[in-house]
Amino acid sequence: AGTDDIDKTIDTALEAGFRHIDTAYGYKNEEAIGKSLKRWFDSGKIKREELFIVTKLPSTGNRAEDVEKYLKQSLENLQMTYVDLYLIHKPIGYFPELDKHGKHVPDPSTDHLSIWKAMEAQVDAGRARSIGMSNFNARQVKRVWENARIKPANNQVELNLFFQQKELVAFCKALDVTICAYSPLGSPGMRIKKNKGDPSKQVATISPLPSQRIEMPLTDPVVLKLAEKYKKTPSQILIRHSIQRGVVVIPKSNNPERLKQNIQVFDFTLSPEDVYELDFLDRGEKCRSYEPRETMSKSELEHPENPRKDPY
Ligand code: A2P
Image (tube, rainbow, N blue to C red; front, top):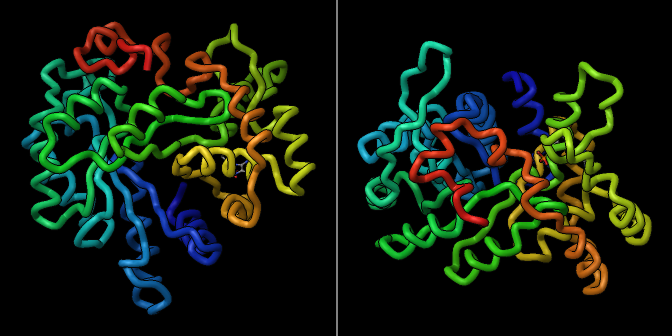
């Protein structure tokens, strides 16, 4: 989003009651977010300590000696002295230089344990209140966890009604690592955009694979039925379902009305029977939208830290 959009989105979000802001060095919007938030701090309407700010180490910085440099840069962009949570964005590291096709090349020397020590040093230095990872599989979380002086607080992964990540959620829960769901609505925008050129494919489908024409969680008949029953919108049903599963959700919207809608989820509770019915709609790995095995390059597939080497 452009800077104006971010100003508008931050204003609407904070006014609606959102306090958790998720960004990343790689999203290239830290500066705009920092500027918007500074306006709020300067006006006295909100204090830094009332917010929960998350940002992420880029995968081109997935080496111990880069962690501090990138976090300091993110803090400068955000105009802050600390973040509440700093995440390793991806398990696979990439070389910073692009190849002749303009692509980033995986760096096979990625070493999570040495990166983690550098992450811990950021907590010691007061630049991060807590640390975690994103897109890690269970084995990768466990290895860091077992070797950590400061345990990972969170693993942020793709998760939605059709891709519930039940094994990973249970596994992380047992280690006291919280799960945060990105794309909790199933990334409707992403699929529609990809199909733009071809009107016959205008139906938003959740899976990137042409063979899988599964429609979106937002239009699932059970979700629509429950929306009617609870007098809520389909997105509110989806968000509430994840919350009741004990998962943190970060739905994204640039639209003020939808943004406001997405936080109106604390005034109702889905019955255990309805949660059960929604639990049952999980379709597993085939509904992964981001970096499914099928779209990974040979060097990513062969990378020692390719998270798709394990079933979850
Ligand atoms: P928009 O920004 O126009 O609201 P996800 O978080 O799963 O990646 O989904 C983000 C997408 O979902 C965005 O394209 C966003 O579009 C759309 N979206 C966000 N909130 C809602 C909602 N309440 N109802 C329908 N679509 C939504």
